[in-house]
Amino acid sequence: MLMVCALVGGRTQPAHRQICQFLVAFRRPNFRTAIAAVRGLALRGQLAPQGIGERTSVAMQAAKRQGRHMGRVSMLPQATSDRLLTLRASYTLAGTAVQLNAEGLTTATGGTWTANSVGKARARLLTA
Image (cartoon, rainbow, N blue to C red; front, side, top):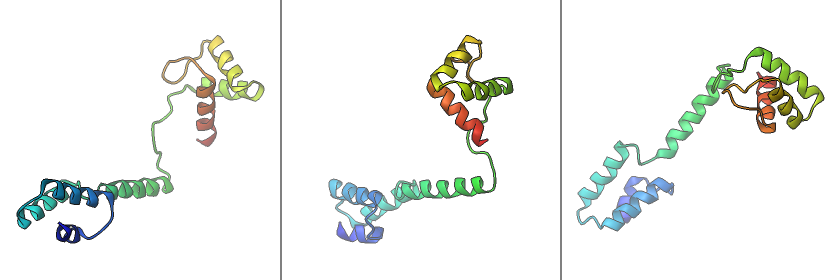
């Protein structure tokens, strides 16, 4: 089985170790069958799943550098946004949440305001 692991590339990536462990566990008696199993896993994308995540991350970083919006667009009404920022200048996060709820203003999803939701909404508004 060491020969199979060497043919996989002799790499120490977790996916390659898993394949070698898989082959050893099933004690493939035929070398050609073992190679076919490795190739089958590679074709299904199970040989190097880390590469997919790395490529996705690089592509998302490039899109962000080009100024594309990443993530969900805020559905918070402008009036609520303005009121949140105004209240936050005078109140704590919890105090702002209490005031927004007292005024009947809801979050973008229709929920009630909490200190955490005020903080996150404020951070998004200030970075937008």
